[in-house]
Amino acid sequence: MKIISLKPDHDGTIAALDASAAELMYSYEAEKDSFPRYSTITPTAVLDAAGRLDAIPDVIALGGWSIMEITGERPIAAGYYGLGQGSEIVGETTIFGRKVNFYSSTHERSHLWGSYGLSPFPLGMPCYALIWEGGLGDFYEIDERLQVVHLGRVMETPGIKYAFLYALADPKFTFPKGHTRREDAGKLMALCAYGQIGSPDRDEQALIDFLLPSDVYPLSKEDLRNSPYYNIGVTHQKFTNLARRVSDAMFHSFYTFAKKNLTKGYPLLISGGCGLNCEWNRRWVETDLFSDVFIPPCTNDTGSAIGTAVDAMRHFTGNAKIKWSVYSGQPFVFDEIDQTGLEVHPVDYNQVASALLADKVIGWVQGDCEIGPRALGNRSILAAPFSRATHERLNRIKNREAFRPIAPVCLEEDVALHFDLARPSPYMLLFQNVLDSRLEAVTHVDGTARAQTVSQEQNPQLFQLLTSFKAKSGVGVLCNTSLNFSGAGFINRASDLLAYARAVGLDGFVIHDNFYLLQTTSRPA
Image 1 (cartoon, rainbow, N blue to C red):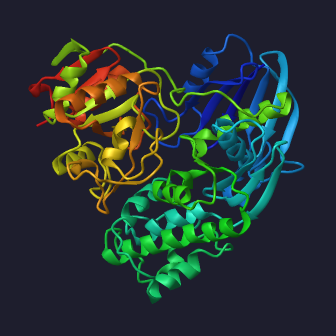
Image 2 (image 1 turned 30 degrees about the vertical axis):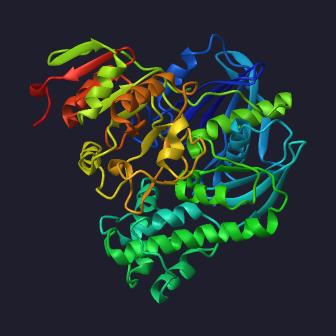
Image 3 (image 1 turned 180 degrees about the vertical axis):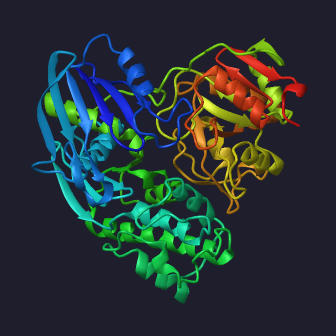
């Protein structure tokens, strides 16, 4: 049985499962291949995904959504909210003249079953689940019979409230009531590190008391025109202090609920866009409330198509576990490129490592795209981790604010030498404190980093490069940031990569087995 699943609206994705093998075939995100971030499903993604199947699928699955997203009004298919009766639609539809099974379940269920299906825990092991995102802030329990119990809603719209905070302080934000910018949550996470440690003062507590109650939606920046934080500027110390206090208060609300109500020691599954908050993820690991914590690499809505496909497979087969790889995205397109001004060499890992050690910044392409929003060594920009100047150069290349951190990638076997959390972090979803003072380029202002760990089995090419770099530098760590035009998904074709390299000043790039070095005259001054 083949299942193809589509996620509507932002973070549009098409995923396919082979239910007979219980395996993810692919997950194509519409933003990849340099389409705008958070794109809805594109014709390109549809055609590429359909081309991977040798026949019409047995099941078409459509993730539930709502035209009025957060309010849940005007449902698309099964809609946004719901777990019980009425939260799934089962029937038939016709595609290209053939009748196939049709399945839809709610967006809420897509997160729940996506995190369960991708998790390493065996079928039937009871789990707790946390979904926290734009519209949901809820805990659940999944028992050994795959029955789901809703344990409670801690907070409505936690993700929106978190992003709204950045908008409140940013003079450039002028969106109308109820709107936020999807990229602001990640920026606020970076700014929290600049906040001073301490308890909330009167102004901070007043804002927390206004923002966190569950009935505050939709939010309007203009309703807070008299707030001391209105258009104060996002890097103002008074605002970064506030950001830290609000972040702590939001986590504490969820932790307090979990400590009281999640008492059986089951593993915790985390999904939703707030699952990209590495500092919060680290805190969940350290609570000791759970036997383990799992956050999938596509924890935000990029994993919703997979979740709906898993839910469909559970409905038709009784199984809700799949085999999968994080490198299940689109294959790289090697179209024709103008090689004027390029030196082309067969890949020699020692040569690439030497270039990185000489402070070259290198684009790195291997295999198929990563799923989810984090570059994990197949669509990356790599650099040596030692210099603050490298950090500044990378943020200029990425057209990002100077306060944004640059993540490291580290040999899994060496993680304890450089960072204080000695456990694998293959999806770059946990904060670590940096122990190695040499790693200036990847150390955030508060001494933390969000490292990706790499083993030979996980990514042999990146593992070999890190091993070669360690042999030359003594350190198996590199800077690793995403290979993308500003405001777009990962670069996924050679012509775009060359244009990008020339535009932003990369020193070279690797595509599979070839190393392309840009001659000095072909790079911007």
